[in-house]
Amino acid sequence: MYSGKPRKPGSTEATDLEAVRSFRRNIKRILKHADGQKQHQGMASADTSWPEENFSCSICLDVFSSPVTTPCGHNFCRACITKFWDGQVKYKCPVCNELFKTRPDLRVNILISEMIDRFGTSLRVKEQPCVEAGEVPCDVCTGTQLKAMKSCLVCLTSYCQTHLEPHHRVTGLKKHRLVEPMDRLDDRMCKKHDRLLELFCLTEKVCVCLLCTVTDHKSHPVIPLKEEYEVKTAQLGKIEAEVNQLIQERQKNIQEIKDTVKRSKADADREIADGVQVLTALMRCIEKCQDDLNQTVIERLKSTVKQAEDLIKELEQEIEDLTNRSSEVNQLSQTEDHLHFLQAFRSLKDPPPPRDWTTVEVRPPSYVGTLRRSLDQLKETLSMEMKKLPDDELKRVQQYEVDVTLDPDTAYPWIILSEDGKQVHYGGVGKRLPDNPKRFTLQGNVLTRQSFSSGRFYFEVQVKDKTYWCLGVARESIDRTGGSAPTPEDGYWTLLYSKDGLVFKDNPPVRVPLRAELQKVGVFVDYDEGVVSFYDVEARVHLYSATGCTFSEPLYPFLAPGPCDYKGNNSAPLIIAPVNQTD
Image 1 (tube, helix red, strand yellow):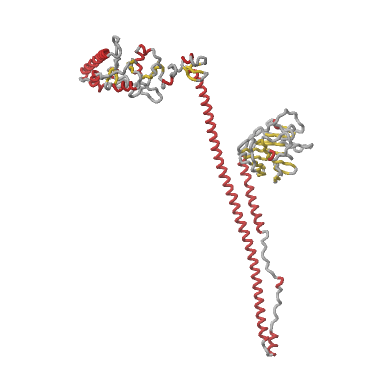
Image 2: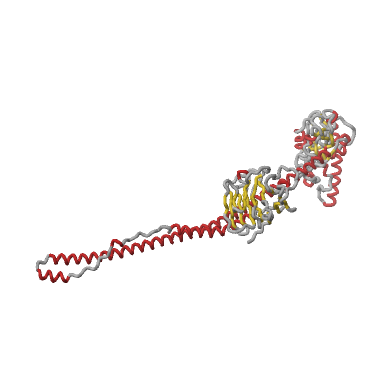
């Protein structure tokens, strides 16, 4: 390295003098070391303890190839320094950053070339870490890129350990600001002031340099980039948490959809199996009824045919007897012998008394009622199979049980709710309650707190010991201040029980047959399919289904316990009961 009197940059004389002095020192060390090695080992070779920097290019960090010397006295491979200068507007030394007015005319340093030819096979350079993914590379290395140790905010260049050395030695370079390695240094500089972007403008939300704060952003509040980074990092953490939450919710939705598809497939398989079982039994019954019908008709036809054949045989026999007698009479009538005629005439047998065929007839068989009786038998078989269905059907709809409680804000003032919101009965005395747009004011009704706008739901209500009640579902927009009839047209889908029996409230009402006194009623709603079904839970019998319904707003379970008389009849409560699924 250069040390001596100041010289004028670009001077050929100074360059040669510096080169001679530098290489003389290197040669002396090398030869001295080589002689020692000859005496010790009997051979001339370089050792790994030699100063590697004497024979290594500061750019590629490898052994010199066609070494050349710059005017400032530093040595490089010709290819390395040429490539380095090809990418520069101003020509400077990569080691000391000395600028040259023109691109220097480089010549091969013959002395170093000869030394490398002599000892090059044993020379090696100090290993430095190569750049890996995610690390900042040295901007000066032209061969294998090494890992940058520092970045210079003045030079706008990142340096490996070797190329950083002048910044620790040269006085002018020591004043440069070194920071941890950064990539895209040009992007970190203010385009207007050529200063480091190290502040953040809160007004315009942009990164600025110090000079920006006294010019374009003079009146704007600014903070260090680190502070804004911490704020944005916290926001980013929140955003990440929200995104993760959304991802989890959607994964949950996917799983719910998959579970729904799985249940749907299971329901479909079960429905097909039940259908096959019932329809197979029905087909067997139809086949049996058809066989029985055919056999009955055929037997009746056979009987009629046999009767006809017997009568025909009898008639044919009579015809034969009469024909024989007619022949005898005809022969006798041809005889002219009076004695023979009289003797023969006496021998004619008296014919048997003729049968009165006017009263004899063959009546065709009657099939009236045969087909009907077969259909009645088929109907009975079908009814027996249908009785097996409600139990399985009820089990299926009970899987959609929901937990609902009565909403006191909707309760008619004359009815009383239990504290747990599961029971309601008629109180007999009206209460003074605060005005509420959700409250029924003219009818003894109450809705639940919960509503449903999609899917399926099921609940059960105990109606034991009651003589009057109404229950089902109602849409949210029903008229709660008037006395409208609870029909689908008005937003109600309900069963009504009274002394007149059980009816589904429609226009006109649909009478629902009852086999026994109701104890508990199940209500099932398929919102998307537009179905409302009612079940006798104790008998496990389907009561009625309203189909083809159109729902466009939330549905609420609806209960009306009905009034009680002075004798206390119908004072029992309606009770929302837990579903008890039995095998």
